[in-house]
Length: 148
Image (tube, rainbow, N blue to C red; front, side, top):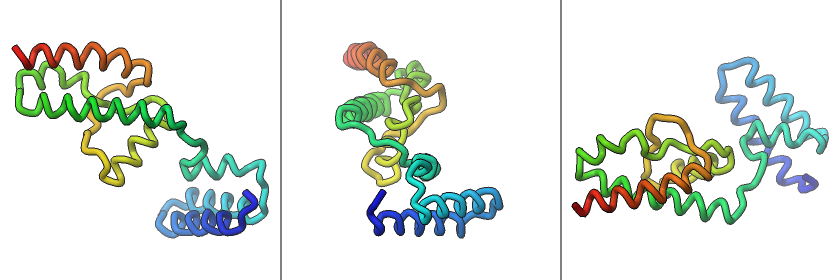
């Protein structure tokens, strides 16, 4: 990261986090990360990025897939909202989050910024592969049952 402005912004973010925390270890780790950035030790930047939860970028294809999964679950939530019998039957299969860190980060970003309304339900998180399979079966069965 050769851009001085970007390095200063990261240091400012770390200083803010440090000030907000009551945990000595957390504040010490913020100081450690600030020292990495100020010293320009690029081989350790990944550690700072992971700490700030910005270690990798999600690809456009994953964003599209997550958007599709979320929109389908929003549609499913709407279908189930007015049918308590169906809701009780399928509530254990509703959206529970992603096992993939980048997909989960994107979901949390959308949620924090009020771009989506889908809640996370209790249960084991799922991979993209599981969501792909699950949504094909789940949406089809709900649509069939809600029509009946």
